[in-house]
Length: 293
Image 1: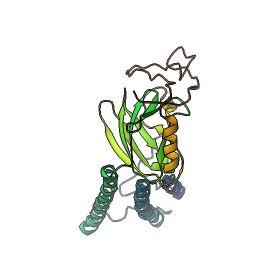
Image 2: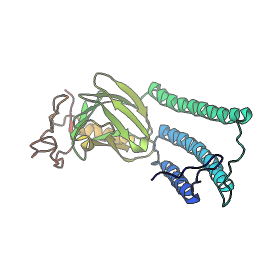
Image 3: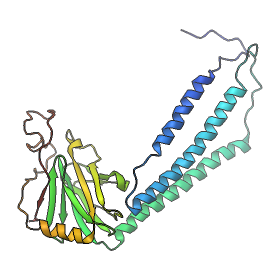
Image 4: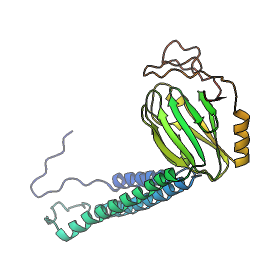
């Protein structure tokens, strides 16, 4: 239905207050929910948390200013009965325009510098002396963790996925790659994600401060069974870590890793009864620990 034609100098209908306030409240709620992060268990994760908090605080200020001025203008200058004439039209104000252009530019520049500083802290951790070196390979549909200095290999397909042990309070250096397509190493409580790219090695490092079990998952869509690629980082004390390594040296292989292929079908360990790539069958393979060749 078309709007009725307005004569010269007459204003179009104004939006109702409810039509403006409701989206504003939803926006504020969305910003508040966006600030909910898992508790970081690494120094790098805590730096990311602090950076997020700065972003959230600045975003909240922007929301308050923008929505506040918008709601004020709507309420203060809304159309009233009998008020059908347009107000005086103002061309602009260069001083105000310079202010509301300059402030966002400065804000973005500050956030950029803070982000670079946090990213550099991850690089510094990589350059630091490592207590543990682990080579990680993502493949469809599982993970392989190799401890080159200890002749231990942990790998698994399907849930619950392999468990990789690390000592608490020590720098763990990861060399990450992919065997077939792009995967991503992601542990929510580390607040960090890194891509596993075939033919390319990415490096990062972390230090877990608290003992515990921290679930991870492939975070890059890699195919139909992408969701069935979990793993667990188990942080323990150094004596417990040494005992775990000693207990698993020389373990016999219990899992044959599928050959790398861009068209890898679901292996029988993932979907033993599947007749096609879209069958939904729960994974059945448990993680295995094997020695490196």
